[in-house]
Length: 395
Ligand code: ADP
Image (cartoon, rainbow, N blue to C red; front, side, top):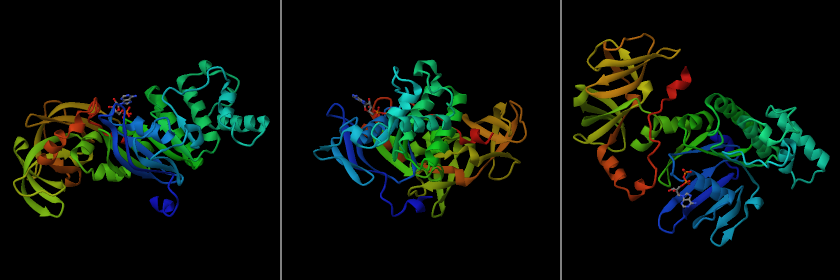
């Protein structure tokens, strides 16, 4: 998909953007990123990682301290330059909908067209058409307070897209909705923004949402962009253990590299599992290095015993439609999300196969360096580092 964007002016370019609220600690640091026209980019990170700050800086709600921001080739923020939000040609969808309470739904949407050279009748016609596209036909003369949360967010979506605005910013728009509605609205956001050919920057702390929506994901930690890539790149080639953990592991082991087998394949001794496993090396690794072995759920299966399988005991098993999800104990560590078509009862002994493609070896030295970084102490930066399993979408 990236090819079709090549050669076009990007929708948004940030170069070396930094912003501090208290003059001491940067909320975002040296932020450089590019979003192509028509691209759906998701910025994903735990709470406090700087997502809202970036979005507000692009919208013009926050002034940046250093660096520059361009929108469709026009500089809107930079040294001694701050274009006002209303002059940036950007629309935004907020978590709390931000509708005008005293205006009808129709007027809320038509209001977004006030700068268009259209008569009042034409504005209302376009607004009504957009409302019917988001499934709110017939509710035009209601007030926001007379709508459910999901309906209000649809109005906000209609308002953001009605002006055929080039760039739409989404600030965690689904956070206030319940799970079922979130899923439906997520699909609508995905289809409607693409039909409108909008360029999108969408922020969220929810990994599932990011993977479901994005053409490109940028993962943030403590005010820095750690990795930007397609969902496949982020999941299959995380650049460090933070990204691997944040995007979903079944479990982890400590180990020691016994040998380097190929450019990115290492043999690792894992005493806790009484096993020697093959793993993908992330970064340079040498024999004798201590590593964390991070295992993606897809890499694990329950198999017959063989020389590479690991013995495990079943702690828990749950039926998940497409199969059974097992939580296992291996040498005292808990490994979750091990899928199998067959049910293995609690307490039974099983053997686990590990596919090296989803078994990632990170140097422990690199991790210790990361935890020693002053930025990692940013408030709440690690709050949301939780196990997350993309396999739930294969149910
Ligand atoms: P996220 O959206 O990822 O939760 P934010 O951009 O809101 O992150 O916050 C990044 C950092 O900036 C955090 O440490 C947060 O406490 C701080 N911060 C955000 N807004 C303000 C503000 N208005 N005043 C002071 N500090 C702020």
